[in-house]
Length: 178
Image 1 (cartoon, rainbow, N blue to C red):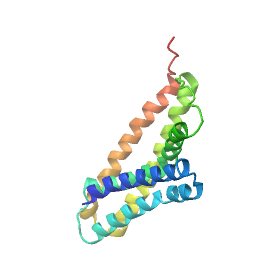
Image 2 (tube, one colour):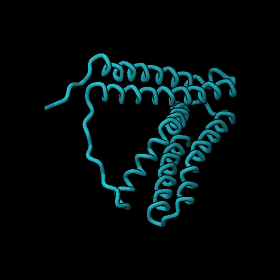
Image 3 (cartoon, rainbow, N blue to C red):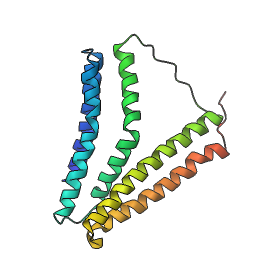
């Protein structure tokens, strides 16, 4: 059930975003668009509440329950950036704004971009890990929440690999292709 809820929440997130953009650019109603953008965190709240209730009612935590925490952390850390990206795409489609040419990043600019991406990933990890930890403490049954702790460990490994890759561009800058 939680797996389907995660999928539904992801769809709900994008429904609110697209509805906000349509309100803003098609119907020229910025207030409604802003309200719909503000509704996107409600999707995360619903997922969190249902996940905690499921575990509180005795369900044994699975990787899917852990993915719910990852989803929430990523949604909070990257949500604003994703909405801004979608807003720029809609402005190109529905306004007289010209699409800027896409520049390839290299050298120090690419290294900075990669580091910023890792910092955002770290923020998502902090939020998701806090949620995982809070659920583990709330349920207070280690055998029932073992999968949540395993999710934390795997995500920490992924974060470490991302760190090595992201910061490698600082040490070994990518050169411009000519």
